[in-house]
Amino acid sequence: MLNRVLVANRGEIATRIIRECKDNSIETVAVYSEADKNSLHVILADRGVCIGAAPSSQSYLNVGNIIESAKNTGCDGIHPGFGFLSENPDFARICEEEGIEFIGPSPDVIGKLGDKSQAKKTMRAAGVPVVPGSEGAVSTMEEARQIASEVGFPVLLKAAAGGGGRGMRVAETLEEIESAYNEASMEAEKCFDDGRIYVEKLIRNPRHVEFQILADKFGNVIHLGERNCSIQRRNQKMLEEAPDFALSEEMRISMGTDAVKAAKAAGYENAGTVEFIVNGDDYYFIEMNTRLQVEHPITEMITGVNIVREQLRIASGLPLEFAQEDIKFSGHAIECRINAEDIFNDFSPSPGRVNFLHFPVGNQVRVESALYSGCDISPFYDSMAAKIIVCGNTRLEAVRRMRRALEETVIKGIKTTLPIQHLIMYNREFLRGNYDTGFVEKNMAELLKLYEEAGGKDESLQ
Ligand code: ADP
Ligand code: ADP
Ligand code: MG
Image (tube, rainbow, N blue to C red; front, top):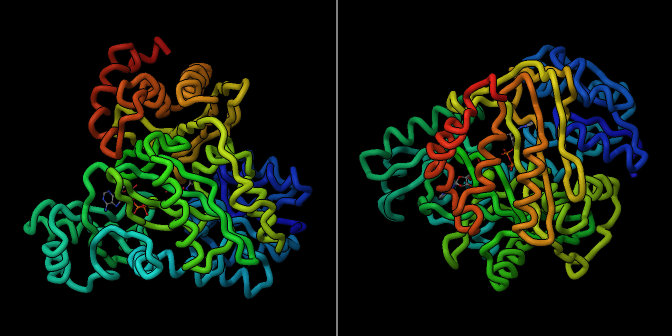
């Protein structure tokens, strides 16, 4: 195994990785910004190195300082977590040049799959179904119009470099192409420094179903089944479950086989996720995320496979410990992403001090978080504060357990999305397992109203 790993991230994912390293006797180095000097990931790691001022551009995205810190502390591996530098091929390349193992796929693979329009080409060539649309990015507005007319409206204009649900706009008609194109491109330019756009047919209210992949350095590729991540707000996941409730065994086999095919076609190594959208019996590849995924714990709960440990093993040059037929699925898992956001103010970030904290415990309940009583949630970073994960023998058992886990959770001092997720656990469509990516838009006003009527806006009641 690697000897000493620098974790180039913060928040809950940094603590997840540091804890896993400790469990495997790997030393850890945390990096942190000036705003994060009292953060839990710094406290947990064997060493901490300050890499710059609070804005990410000066710290968590500061490649020079991170590489320098890894060299100065004698690290032989860097885990990028998710977000930040995790899908940056230049960072992976510099690690390689410096002789430090980047815990993820090769820079070429990250680059090839990071351009989502190119990734679709690779997948189509490998025989994996993709959403109809442009071949690669379009170079003019006219080309976008032409492709849209060919595939039929509505269409989505998507950023080739997109992620986190950003740089994506719907055009219902030919007339809407111009504004959708400009808005998507401007947002993509702002977020990713890359305004290139591709065109995709909009599949109305599909399910988002993704497959977890593990691939070692010896060409062994397996999948760990699927996750349904259709509860999304503005194309960002809020809650995930595994397995998907509506997949026939035939489709599961077909999609799993295609996910492995996709990873092999890309020359993939380490953990990754192949994302599909599903419409009835049809499924389409949308993208492959070349990193650990936020919702990886639900797959861990139903397979017993420790994905972060496997990442560390793969990067250490060890072969996968299991073949596809060794992977057995048991039970049903649900994860809620608890974001520090004000649900009554358009989910705007709600940073501040957590002055009291109580997390749920008990059978089949897991919490991933970097919070502690008295910690500060910084306004500088992503608002995800904790993940609450439960497992049950059946879906209903998992739902009941999630209800009680959320009821036990107390996070004082900041506003969080928890009340909405708690209400979703009682929603009829959710309970029936009859929902798609349109769920949040359709139900949010009602959920907010229910919570408000229950006194949720009245701070004195809380
Ligand atoms: P998924 O892993 O399911 O694709 P996201 O797209 O939401 O989920 O995950 C990537 C996002 O996570 C990034 O776009 C970024 O906004 C966010 N992110 C990056 N680093 C962190 C972190 N340390 N804690 C929480 N969120 C982060
Ligand atoms: P990101 O890179 O931001 O994660 P994705 O391409 O994975 O973007 O899409 C995010 C979400 O947007 C999907 O989970 C789905 O809900 C929606 N989406 C993306 N492409 C389509 C499409 N062609 N039709 C319908 N919904 C889509
Ligand atoms: Mg995605």
